[in-house]
Amino acid sequence: MDQICVVTTVVDARSVADVLAAAAVAGRLAACAQVGGQVDSTYWWQSNMETSTEWEVRFKTAPDRVAALVEQIRANHPYEVPEVLVTRVDSGNPDYTAWVHEHTRA
Image (cartoon, rainbow, N blue to C red; front, side):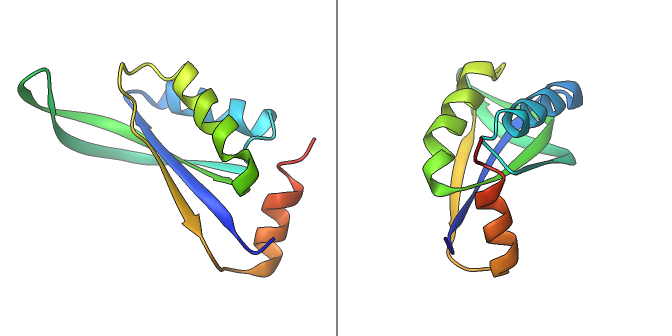
């Protein structure tokens, strides 16, 4: 139970970020979701270089909940090709990792 995962995505509006965060926590797919301030992203889209302002959402979850969380994010994300990145955290505060595991259970 030492390992947790952080799943991140970005969206184009704070309200969308808040909805994704609340849905994941309410559904016990994440123990916590943090909506970060605006970030400016520069990227290629349809053969053009674009720059836009986005909101980051970071979800803390147990490894066995990652697949379901990623699927929920993809199903409810407004982008055609959403960024969804999974980072495995191998160590941290044992009390926190236990809390994450506890709160990703029904």
